[in-house]
Length: 341
Image: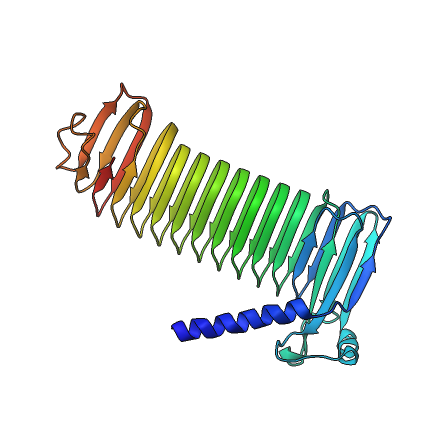
């Protein structure tokens, strides 16, 4: 398995190198034109948008859909006869489009083209981006940002506004995002750092890794673990197939898993803590300087600090108040114990 993973990593890195070294087939400069919207679509390539540019520009990258086939400029021109390629500005919208003239190609897949776009854009724009066969990379944009890919990863940096993106076949990495954020993937992990706002992140096939997030955060995965560090706000996390670990949480936290344990520390509670697992133990450090109403249930409860609160720790139950009560703290495990410090 290690040899296979190394081989795949080398192939991928080689593919990335090829993509980075390829020269643009076409470059169009839209200097002096006002652009407030990007409408970009391609059926076989990646999309990259660099925001904050003073001069709007589009680079078109074209290669064979087969990585091991290098095309001459003549071969590219010949194959482009089967495509409709548009790069233009109309009524403030920058349009970049590449699509086959026929909906279904009858020729071999290796004869197809991968057509990608790299765009230097103003910061304040709305976007409608889509690709069926490549990654999406966005940076320094502010607006209503919509984007989707069926076959690649997403790398998002310094975005603000109403942000909505989805991929069916790759991971998502986001850093320094702010606003109303909704991202989903069916086939990869999600890493979210240094962001704030209304954040909703969903994956069906990977892990969730959060760091330094503020606001209302919801993360869901059906097939991986969850890690969350330095969270300030409302944290709602759930997984059907992994463990949950968190550190330095300030606010409310709701966490559930069907396939692992829960472990973490809470610095401050706003209103409530709700944690549950069907297949592991719960280990949590609570802020015992705050008033809490405790409702704990597991095979057994281990805690030196709760000995004065309840005499039913061996039975796996605690119902009592700390510092006169106040914040609701509820924990449940069906197949493990609860450890509280």
